[in-house]
Image (tube, rainbow, N blue to C red):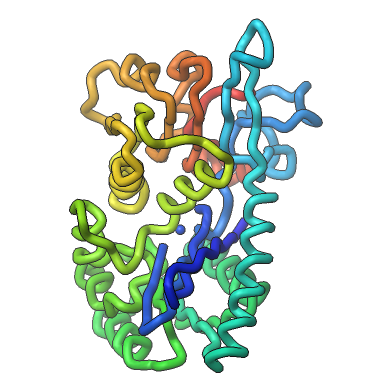
Length: 329
């Protein structure tokens, strides 16, 4: 699922999304979402008789909701409420389409997104395809440069430079991961900070980490997590939050965003002692570690909000995709 979120501030437009980031060019800023929604083991009511997602085919897995709220007030035993991320995404898309139309009419500007894809990884190709579809659906133009796996760094940097100076391009995405022979940090930092839609530029991340600073762009998967919480009426301020995973793409920036929303944040990672004990203290849990079924049901206290960002291809031969969560609701 590709989704984009819109909000306005002053005279700027902000497009952001669940499962992604932001870019700002003059008075226009937009965020792109992750290409696909997480697959996980939260099952909707119609699949209540199914076992957890282990062993299910893709079409049997509940891919729309990505949040569960265990609400002890609904029954003597905690009951999980699944919030449908797909319906939120649809609402967001509709909002964006209206705002893009207003920008076109008022300023004569058509927001433009450029994507650079290196290699032929099936997952990356899917992500890029979904991003283009999402842009088309809301009236944003998109273009793509697809380079072979054995391309040189210079060829990628040339493509980046071309988009940096192209006035019709307001945001640039470099599809990660890049081939191992390339310096990812060098290429990502070559993107103009005013077009850094992923928010991975060191200056953007630095501003995100500092109080009183505002990054031009926020990594979009973390931003999507916050968007789901706020649009679902979940209070963040004063809550204890645990992020499972500390990657540059999700774990670290989502922890920084939760802190910006005045949560008390802990990060659980591969060197953490007693991760289950720490996670059980959380009011909000965001699992973004990339290990299938790591977070078990007994890690979650009653009443906690859980967002599962993990997508893990356990066996590509049978297209078995699992979440980080190892329990169903």
